[in-house]
Amino acid sequence: MVQTNIDELIVFGGLSRPTEGVLNDCWRVALRECKFSEEHEPRNVIVSEFKAQGRSPTARYGHQCFLLREVMYVFGGHLELEEFDHSIYLLDIQNKIRSSFLPSFNTEISSRASSMVMQLSSTEILVFGGTSTASTENRLEQTAILDLSSCGWSVPFLAGERPETRCYCSSAQPTDSTMLIIGGLFDKYCSM
Image (cartoon, rainbow, N blue to C red; front, side):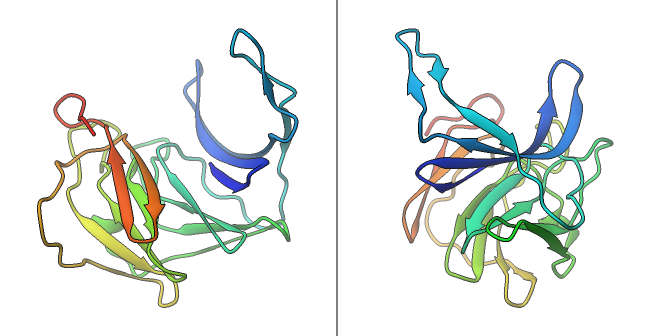
């Protein structure tokens, strides 16, 4: 899910309950007229399927999305049978065109789900943590950088105290050079 502007969200894929079906559909959620009732229920939310030309990404859950220059990138996630799709999918929101590319292959880096992503520059994305299986047993400690101009992965040198390995957590980017990692799963739940 990415927020394209203050009035709109784009939602891609995920896991459907109760059927446990893995999805690859894309939806636009208009928030302009959204109001909350006294029961904190959203009202006037307009949802429509987002249709685009090109090959659809593989159905997945536990993936990450980020927005860069009106293009939504879909990275990682679990497929149906403990498999990973190593491609990066792009959705040009303005022109409604889908495409993909395969970064230089590095199984240890690209086979992950439930990781955190942060935009470092107009061509570099930082990826932290996640898991290499559908369970939380194989949590990943590694931090990697995806260079979108060369389609290659690199592993940066990190100084200072490192957070515990974790997956299924949230992150925020309050400034261009800061990533806040919030909660998640370690042996049990992680604090902030």
